[in-house]
Image (tube, rainbow over all chains, first blue to last red; front, side, top):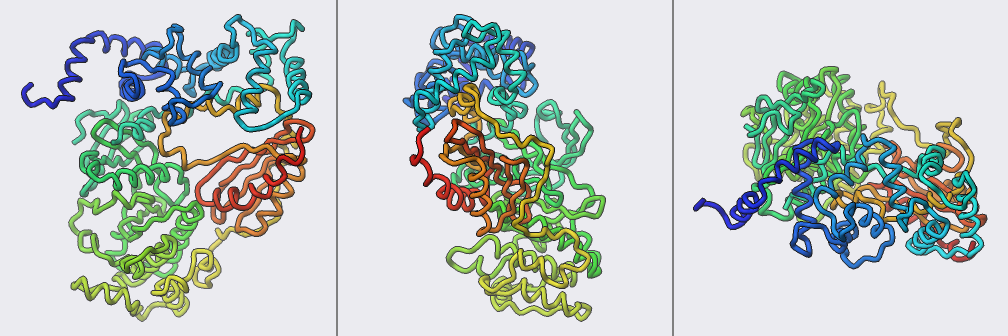
Length: 212
Length: 412
């Protein structure tokens, strides 16, 4: 004990305070696609992210944006959506188990159905079980503004009409989960964002983060 | 010995193959598939005091992960813990070219084969903007099929003298392979310096001794600087000529990788010269030639906030570049312009389908991929992916300005 550095001592005390962490990690390993070693590595990553600004071991919106854009006050519609979807308990922060479970969806080996549902939740802005036309419009406009593209009202409407026509099979003007699944099967490239090949090599990307 | 075995639950670590200032190399077996690998273990504490070294290591590992070539040792996986970095590499069974040469000189036909393979590997890397900077016999391995493998590519910052075999130390740490301009003050070009080192390697394969050597280091520098060497009597005139072009002390007049392709000694029996043509080569005709019209969800998926890889990639993300631009042009015109513009530069166009093309750097595989999508009646989205080497030169400086000037002329 006498030879411990301050930092080691803190780590030691944290472990004493939190004897259930090993149990939590083991449970996550059994319920996600990550091995226990990878969960440990993800924990190191999570610690780095969650103590970046507000040192409470939970990822706040600013910390999430900082990690994605190196800018904690970046305004980005889709990053906000992603944050909200990661925040399963809807308490405004991402906790470790939410972080691991959400990342697991992006694993190359995660079932496609899981990815499809995650993406549906991502785009269902009002959380009412439908992707509605006005939600779709909001997202298209957000992207066009991100890309600095100025489209006429007519052009936007025409893109929306065509997409709704393709996806909305029962003609109620909005897309439900079943219709979404069919739409994805016809347009599989939309799912591309939902897979992060580098998650197969958790230790690889951690190299960049853990190296001083 | 690494403390946990199997390492990361995957690699059974075996005997020590070599060690150096920053790293140790072990033989290991991947227990998931039985494959032999070499694991280089770098101690972070040994390099962490030097920020320059750390950033070099990171950058070079990122580059190494991108290199895929039959004559370059593959980096299979990079892993890390808080104290160590683990580089899992392809294990080359045959041995070192050094050992072969130390038993006696190689016949000219064998030297030629190895040199052709060496140039293929070097050309591939140079076309991606990657230079070895530490080419020597000890970094060239020969696999069990008798093919050459260049090791330590992009790792010059950490190679040091990674040798267990005392015998090899006679060459280690000497400037024998270093081009004269490298130890002169001022900058030097990685490409021409690599060519010099290849010249020394070719000389040693043929002669079984170094072209410039002296037990006195200062004398050795002088010999390299003067560039005077004597070929053994068995050297053919053609080889002699090539060596004098490779070991030209003036980097500006030294033969280049491209020129070597046309050298008569080099060309003999060489079937791997990449033809350089600007014509469209249709690769996969059966792929649909129809232009993809973007639907609303395709458009949304372009959102940068949806790309989580930024969370993990850190600095390596700058290696593979890409962007999407919106252009007021017909899709046919976009592709037409791309083809027109690259006629001026040293790349080939491979057409995957009507609106998907790859721009291939010399000696390389697909480097920049360009795909055109329809956004509206008047606008298309041009998606560019790829990077390294020719991205900046070909896309950013040539094609992009050509396309972008059309922007804002027509609004959809």
